[in-house]
Image 1 (cartoon, rainbow, N blue to C red):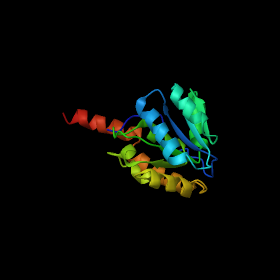
Image 2 (image 1 turned 60 degrees about the vertical axis):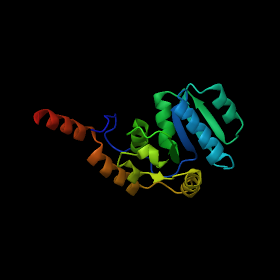
Image 3 (image 1 turned 30 degrees about the vertical axis):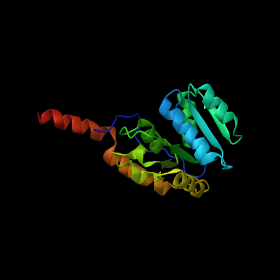
Image 4 (image 1 turned 90 degrees about the horizontal axis):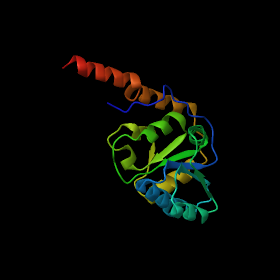
Length: 185
């Protein structure tokens, strides 16, 4: 049964944004490592604006971001601010080294955001890779960022997301699966 979430329909914004967004709880080691990888391996020599948003960034992350003029840190954003960052980003970049099943932030981005670039571990065990652009390593991820940054996000992409998400990840489907499981016992 997929995770329950707060979304009823896809609200991605057609058009183009002006930055790439990575977000997460920056006090968690996995997210700190992802932030460092993204900055040092993907954005080190890119002129594309990157926003890193998250809770409680370490001093090391604050220092690292300070070394890059095209990278902006948004510390401890409110839910409303986070939702606006996701909606207005040209690309939501999600990266993980741990395949731990469905990540709610991935669902959140697919319901609210434009282009979504991930590595394979981010979508492992889900069908959500169909809705993302996927790069296996830093070279592929960087190529995807460069190829997607100036490409508008279209209504037909929203419709494809709506179709897949409503078939497999809608809360109603999960409720039905639970009801069927209870009745079959």
